Length: 176
Image 1: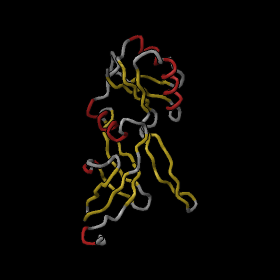
Image 2 (image 1 turned 90 degrees about the vertical axis):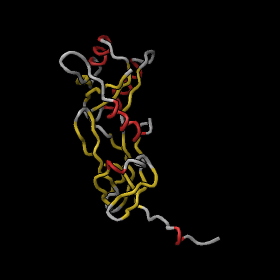
Image 3 (image 1 turned 120 degrees about the vertical axis):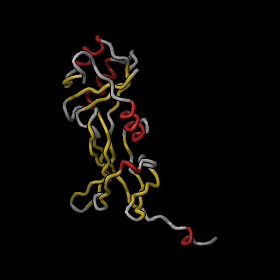
């Protein structure tokens, strides 16, 4: 079984995901629409929102066959299953492992807790822990980290939510 990308109408990813789950409930097929939790500010107030990480894509984990390919293509709002000249092409393992580790095999990429150490951003907790190398920039005001991920052979820059914290140093901790 491998991961494949289905190109769908933007904004209808969840609808297509549910349709696939209903239509193929008796077959081995798993779907994923990765989302990210972000903090947005509107009219001076902050809100947590959830947005799609890869708009226009539904990811499927299955054994792709010709029959399955044509059944997927026939679903409303599906433009195409990504393929080369002849057959559907699976998403490379390296690309999917990054997405799966960020989502923790769920759907929503939670907020990370980060702090600044010199010019470096260090991650205390959250999905970016141990992945400091993919962080390009932190926007303290918007509470977002810009990361670069590879998807379908292209590098995409996406924003992920993060909270800046001030780590408590050993010498600053009160004694018991």
